[in-house]
Image (cartoon, rainbow, N blue to C red):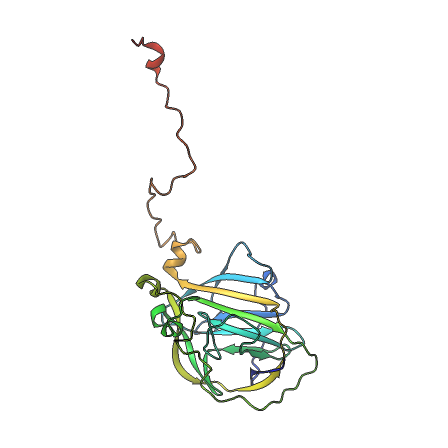
Amino acid sequence: MKRWQMGLAALLAVLGPVTGWSQRPGAADVEVEVVGDRGRALSEYPLRREDRPGVYKAYLEATRGQTYSLKIRNRTDQRIGVVVAVDGRNIISGGRSELAPEERMYVLGPYQQETYEGWRTGRNRINRFYFTDAGNSYSGAWGDYSAMGVIAVAAFREVRSAWDQGGPGFNNQRGMRVPPAADAAAAPQSRSRRAEPGTGYGESEWSPSRRVEFESERQPFARFFLKYAWRDTLCRERVIDCDSVTPRPPRNRFWDEDTDRFAPPPPRRERYETEDWR
């Protein structure tokens, strides 16, 4: 089925080599980075165990109030489509995302790199991404905490080989957002959960785009899940080593000990062997 997807009009400069890309799924085909205010990629802390093939998972450190962007680079000689979701919401439509091929996606030309800076609100406008509390996030505004704090990208190859850069133009609408009543929002969240990080709906900026024809394969060839968290959370979860600035909590003899131990024999006392007992 042919669908009209969105592709940014301008080509950006190509990034240099990034350390560690050889360990990522589809590393030879696509790159995904989260970039901070000054254009520097945020450090990633990959999970040591891969749950599924073709899936990359890593932690990121979020700083409250910091704006950020997503850089995605197509390293192939063919077009690819990328469905991008932040906190579980498609960044083009604003609707709840399942990273499905039917969703709205960005299209990257051969060897093209693009930067996605916010929620798309029209053909030429976006509202910036920035780290904030989950209760103040865009997804939180819809009552959806089901994928809070996760930046997800699914990359799809194109079915047909011949392609046309033309098209009727991007429909200048303010997203195709699902009303809250119809949205599959999560159950009510606790106040502590809402204090976790989320991505806000920041200031509006100019960001031209256009619509192009793109038919994607049914399954993505690579998926990226980047979980961002506040530094104190990463320290507490031992994702990063913070011993120099954050002391380890004291051990708790009722909690930290090995729970698989059993009652040992009582210690022998010397008097058991030397005294007569009546």
